[in-house]
Image (cartoon, rainbow, N blue to C red; front, top):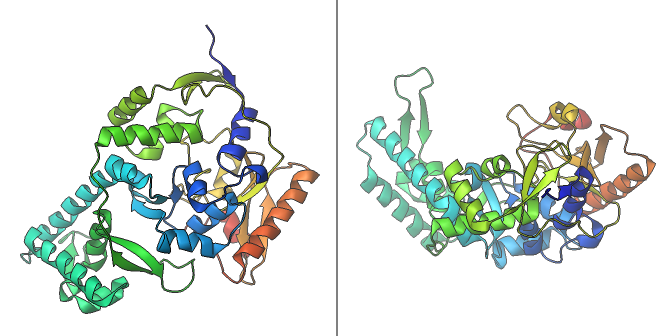
Length: 389
């Protein structure tokens, strides 16, 4: 019996509706927008806001700030691929158990190794004391930046030597590493930053760790959601997206029991059980997505929505994608914001006059939403740099 065929056009069509990018499919809440793509990249502070904006029917930056800092219905976790993501509070325990716990344990082992090699007698007991002092300072002083915590806690001003005796030997302060550990363990979280929503100078506040959950069950839940958002996709795509071992990926897939479909190139891919039919039709759509947007970063193989000839213009040297222009599920160009606030974009192909008109309208919508804020991607790409030159 032959497998159901999912065409490239259908894969692109699914993106518009399932990733809430088509106007008629846009989300009613920030949480719904985040859940539609499982998780929003949060390495760059602006990405969370711009990714949510592209998927929201209405609402400005204040609505996203409310979700992050008041309702705490959207939370940042160091998780998949050792990267910072923002996920819904409902999904967070699964992300924590499936991925973040292991990362936190590895981060602690690494710091303890550095402390031991530094030779000043700093050990696990010293680290526990530094962490306790930082938590006490937050209780006493309220939301605090890393600099404020260092001023209040002498232990955080400690310096250690990394890679002593090697040509890349360097002296580092421990404050950032200790704060990172407390956040990875779920004992503190990022609160409102200093400055605007584009700032990464976060204040920190105490919080409670997520409830413990079986890691295997948590991975199964993550895979179930990921397949719904990103299928058709392959085992290799899932391994890349999660950063898990191949064994964990295969066990989670076996627990979900995905269906197989055939792609136009003759290869096979995975979808959620029963998810082999076409997606309901949607109107033509355009989107201006930020660097590291989850739709651009959802697969190891992006060939169905990105012409390989355009990769060098849109990615930095480390493989991070910059701001992109989309037309009906395909990357057709890139965009940037100039210092005067103007949103400028360039097409890398010829999608047609209708596409240009809709993209122009979407660029104006983005400019109005951003207002007086200025966006400079954390990872600069060749095309983005050219557009602002």
